[in-house]
Length: 209
Image (cartoon, rainbow, N blue to C red; front, side, top):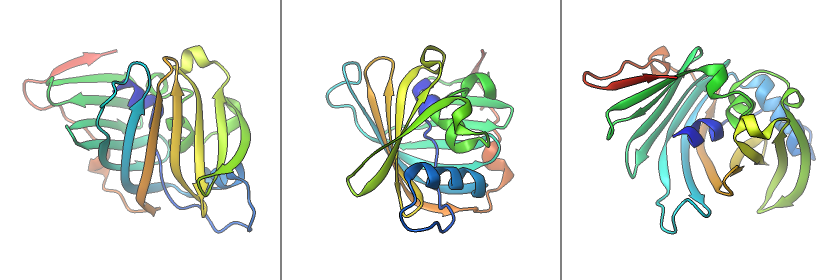
């Protein structure tokens, strides 16, 4: 679940404004961060690498976000998991363990892919951003955190298509790569406030970090 917060990719998510033909992935992502204040959509993600397991099943679910810092990342298959941020705290809920971990947003997200997609700051404040060659029909950029030790990952590559972030490839500190594919994205969608609130079910163990 911690990798989900860092990668969250989370998000993630939606349509940027119409840009001039030939805009780089970095230009498209900056426009996306600047103009898309909320979004909803679906995701599929899978992790490969030395510690991920050879047959680790892909996760599927839905997401929503609202700037600055509110998001919902809900895994529905193959098992339920939930990450919710109300803009102040991040709740990581595991129904199978009946446990929720609570962290402050700044500590949980920090210099992470979530900060790129859900925040409102300048990318260069926390990342070194470079362009990559086109691949798989997408335009790519790479963001490396200035302090990889604190971020918990080495780099994140973001693939853009028609002004949309549609794929994220995150390399973590353990040599694992998480791929997240985004779909059914609705930019500037009206998201009910309740989507960003979490109340622990009765009997849930609450751990505050």
